[in-house]
Amino acid sequence: MIRVLVADDQALVRGSFRLLVDTAPDLEAVGEAETGEEAVALARLHRPDVVLMDVRMPVMDGIEAARRIAGDPATADVRVLMLTTFDLDEYVFSALHAGASGFLLKDTRPADLLAAIRVVAAGDALLAPGITRRLIEQFTRGPIPTAAPAAVLADITEREREVLTLVGLGLSNAEISERLHVSPSTTKTHIGRLLTKLTARDRAQLVIAAYESGLIRPGGGPAAAPTAS
Image 1 (tube, rainbow, N blue to C red):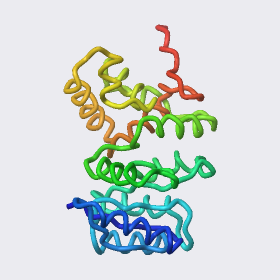
Image 2 (image 1 turned 180 degrees about the vertical axis):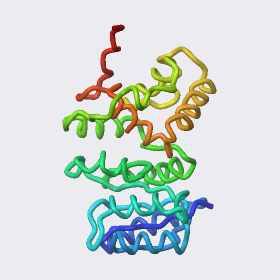
Image 3 (image 1 turned 120 degrees about the vertical axis):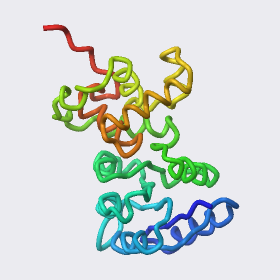
């Protein structure tokens, strides 16, 4: 059973999500939070598998709540699935840094919301690649990340670099396998090694690494390969 905490400052929205979660035979709503502060407290109390977290809430917003949940050893295994709208896309990169494992749009279909909770609970992230690419397109219009590529990529192989680039572009494992002409198990192995080498919490953190290392250029495309000096 996947245990879900629902955090949203609107009672009607919060109740609707809870009711929807409880309709699924493999999901169970364990609580509701009206503020980010309540979400952090209830995450510590109930240790849910997933927190469905609104971005904008009073007292403490969802991004700060996600940061505290991800940063607390007692709740480090709790996955945070952020609720956002296209009006709030400027928060996506901050939420990724805070430790969020994925994003949902508030107009997501009910069946897709339930599927997304399962995906995040299983340790994957960023949900449907189509949503990922649209979000990435928005936040890559901002300033170019400044982290030095060498610091992020020093220990990864050329093939892992290619996989990281494609993850950053929002491709699924199946799409990466097709693009690189490798088996799905090989792609999964590369991603597992990237998670270990980059000390990434999940796939969302790999997207951050792809941008901060300069593998992805603003606009959502791969950066040009560096030339030999």
